[in-house]
Image 1: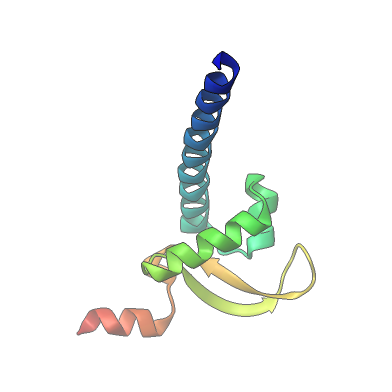
Image 2: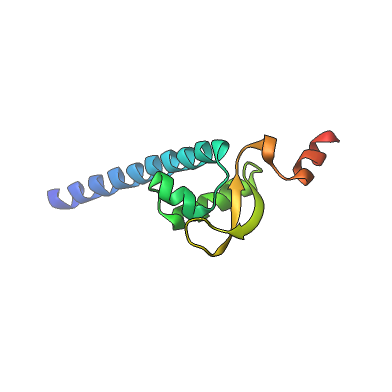
Length: 102
């Protein structure tokens, strides 16, 4: 019985740790893209956050209007076409800026 309780406590700790990692990774990506325009692969190389995680955070940030795709061109890291991203509203696409005028 005691062993089972320790496992549960360990599981709860792991869940809290994952939530902390999520917030930390999201904040790191957001801040990086405030200062850089980059693809998910380039962000991954610069921050050490797995590219798959960055794609998930990208979706979440886009849904709340905090991340924009600037242009699709060859990635400097992979050589494949990819979207260059930003969280900086000053360099967001023109359609975003126009929406703020009204």
